[in-house]
Image (cartoon, rainbow, N blue to C red):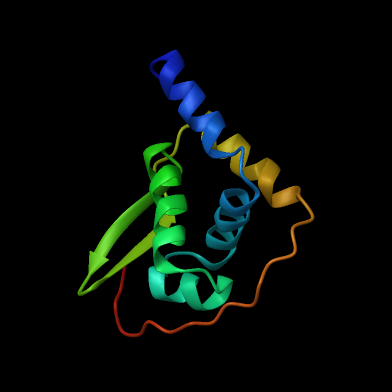
Length: 108
């Protein structure tokens, strides 16, 4: 982490139950298309995209385009601070929705 602003952005990104749940979901299932997340979480694309943007800007996620969709995955490489945060999230008893896979045929 380079600055106090980076630190605060990272910590602030985790100050939302939906974003923590999204991180755990992506950590478990691997790279997922926005359409998969929309279907699984029952969220609107705009709300979901806002949460994903915050997580990406905080350094937790990477995004790759595949046709008309964007796939999100845990960033690699990831620094120790963020990896430790993800390890803590793994241990949280979060009720996750079932994965509703919609995307097909695009390797990320």
